[in-house]
Amino acid sequence: MVVDKPFAAGLEALIAPNAASQGKGSESTSLGDTFGRMFNEVNRFQLNADAKIEKFATSPNKDIHGTMIALQEADISLRLMMQIRAKLTTAYQDVMRMQL
Image: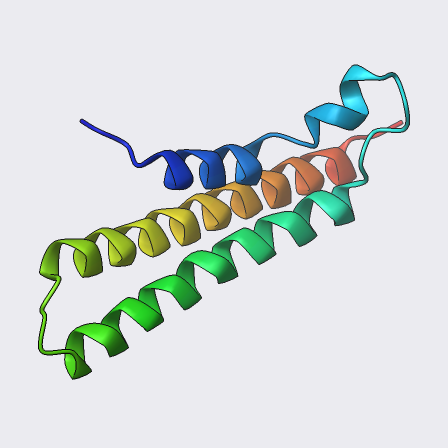
């Protein structure tokens, strides 16, 4: 399976925290910053897919492959974000149930 380089970079941005701040020993990014970046990346994929759909519908040159790839990128990134959210929610609930 061939993975588009911008798509792979977007998935890495969804998963990995900012490597530059970790490598230099400075403060690691907060969870809120990480989620903010995740939301922005997913939103970017969604907007790209919307633009491809609009271009496909209005353009005389039909790029079905590019449109379908953009739709799949948006779908996969949204599913990944939802799975991460579900895992974090479960982990939070497990921690809250722990007794001291």
